[in-house]
Image (cartoon, rainbow, N blue to C red):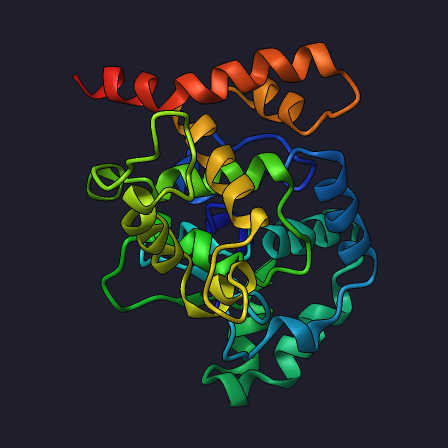
Length: 257
């Protein structure tokens, strides 16, 4: 239990990026209109019970490191802060007072804090950036295509890229590239990977599209280009982007030299 002003979230309650937050831990663009709409809605309808104890990362109290940097639950933190700023968090604070014994502190401790928030502090050693990505997989607000590609690009480490070996004409399904595909699937985890294989364990077209987007993001790291990739209404533009996509693996190699 801490004052919410001690918690370091990726963005302010109104969606401005927090310069004190390590943005590699935030796979989402919390300044997007859809994200802000979610924060506004959640703040307006704050449900204390959904911000307490949970066995999942995408529900319950936000999760932080021991430095109070949010690793999962930036949106929830923003919503609670917004509710406090609007003067509409009384029910949440009263719930903390009522449930104080259950969580291991006293009602007096809650009352002594101006804007208390219940958090979970991670105690195990992990890769924080990867945990932030994994913790967002089941978030109620789905990743946009751009957010997904950027998160996947972070999975493409040196060891995985060493396995990248499509055919000469760029076929990702080539036999020579199977180890890379399996490596990429393993990075997703069994549950998510199951969505991208057929009954006979063959990769789906959705997986190939996702890999292409990740490679593209890794090579060029440009949100505007990623958003244009999803715009299929302009064939001429798609031809240019396809050419950039074909060149992306070589571009990544050049960056590593």
